[in-house]
Image (cartoon, one colour):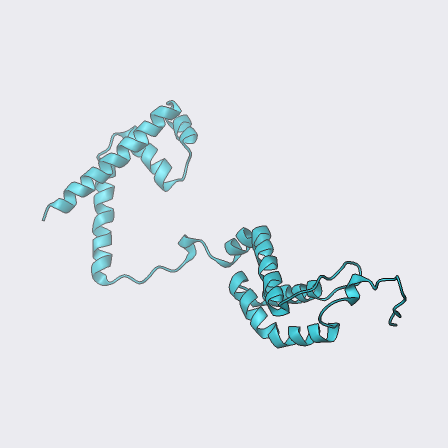
Length: 189
């Protein structure tokens, strides 16, 4: 039901929109595919993009509770609403979604090695094993626990019966010895 204009009585702001709701709907349907593509590029997920564009439309069309200021360029306004909603969603859920979609680096399949690369890898592993065997026992254990076992320095110190700084020094020195020995091996023909 439309209100009649009466002298001295202003219409609510939501009736003052430069575009009637039908025109806004037509504008939305005309730009919807492009808006979904835009949102999908921002979010990386077409399903979430479609939901976001629908949310943008609901914010674009007044609901009667709040005023609707004159929008000079309604299409640009729709794109801005989509962009802002996408940024908000990425801030809230971006890290979680990225972790869900992207497998950890160690879960990705490795590129197949050539026979030559495989032989070089086996030789390098054998050299590292030989270098580790030549290290002092505590240094070797500290390095193996830290690099291969993923143990903390506190756990290494407790296992070896030394202080945490000593455990750090043992692991660091052992790693340096391995690196120097490998570097010297590569310099030889």
